[in-house]
Length: 262
Image (cartoon, rainbow, N blue to C red; front, side, top):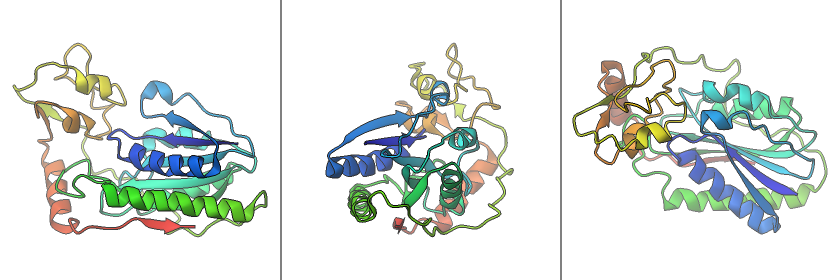
């Protein structure tokens, strides 16, 4: 048996939640944990194999109510024969809409048995004024408690096949948002060309020759470059994105709690 934590996490919020759950499950089961970070483009080709004894914990951020389009093919390529799985969606305090249901359905169709799911909150990519600093310690405590619940269920069901869990969401899924422009964050004169943004960009959109240049066709607006810039030299100045950030700040600043399905 091995716990395999697979996650896509440009701003590291999905990583933090997924690995917190996975570490607790692996510790309680006294088994090994494999960390499979597929955030960078060059890692997406690594499709792990699963035995029936393994446990998959799949953690993804929510983009406009769905799983990220850039990672959709990878998730469809995950296959198993009765491997137990847990799905984890991390969203920016607005709503996770159909993302968690989408994850469950894809895995069930591909031979996994999804026994649990959780929707957790991370700081929004477009503004640090929504879900600021999350996941915080309270979120991580709930993630660890979720891990305890997963182990309890695993021990109760043993090797038996289980029915698919009920998860909130709609099918057909919400249409992917097409309102965001094909733009990239801008760069001001405070840039020192430290290259942190280019090195951490998950899609390689930022030029390694000039970090002020980026390819809008590759950019997924994860805003990792903005969040990690040590000089605050990266920023969004597109009117639609600024408007969306303001809407989120005005309407979705009240703390939401994780939702668990088990």
